[in-house]
Amino acid sequence: MVLRVTGLLMGTLRRMRIVSEIESIHRAIAEAPTNLDELEETLGSGASLADPVVLAAVPNAYRASCKEHCALWEHCREQAHAGRHPSVLGDVAAEQLAAAGSIDRAIELMTGAGAPPRNAGEENLARTLRAANDAFLRVANV
Image 1 (tube, one colour):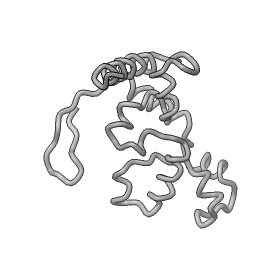
Image 2 (cartoon, one colour; image 1 turned 60 degrees about the vertical axis):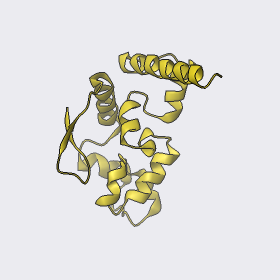
Image 3 (tube, helix red, strand yellow; image 1 turned 90 degrees about the horizontal axis):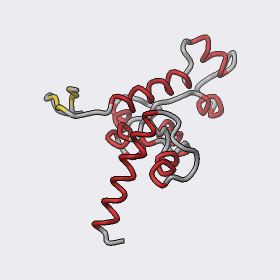
Image 4 (cartoon, one colour; image 1 turned 30 degrees about the vertical axis):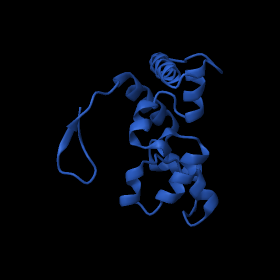
């Protein structure tokens, strides 16, 4: 996949796990309003983004690059922190942990705590995280 590096005019080639991306897209589609009518239904008639309660109800997809172009980036970052979303760890972590959906779920998958993997993306992520954790423990002599 060819991606442009923020701030540079050159592309980069990076390997990506497509299964995790697909799971992430399915989750985003399921969670987000699909049109303005659904958003208005979620927020209520006459809702204003000046109202903090209304603003908190607006779904977001925070990325570090949001700071460059969006006045709401701080609000979205706070929501991402509160929801323990991997995007607060940076774009690479968000991409790699996409199948988990949250930092807490990624930790559950790594440690084997909580619910078992719910789909192929989580299974792949669990294997990857466990292997990385095992390698870290070996190197750290823990």
